Length: 82
Image (cartoon, rainbow, N blue to C red; front, top):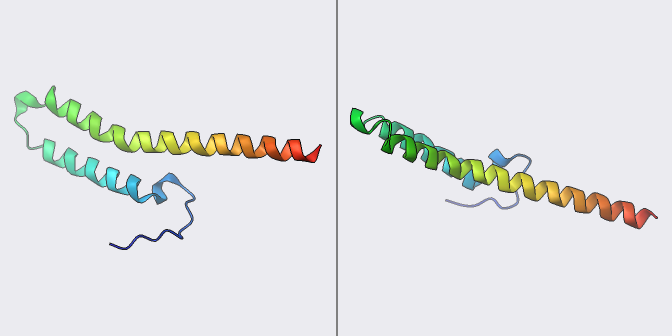
């Protein structure tokens, strides 16, 4: 697999790590459907929540990073205009 590092990231869905985490979460969801009924409400729930949390954290971190970058960039611009 060749990485295309020159591609501009416009959305968190453009990140390869996000796409991989999302695909893994879908696979985990499909696999846990085959678990025994008695495990559906304990182990299955925990596994599914953990798999979803990975790509949710990626979005949260990227959003926080971009927001901080935007704030610092804006403040720097305003400071240099004085």
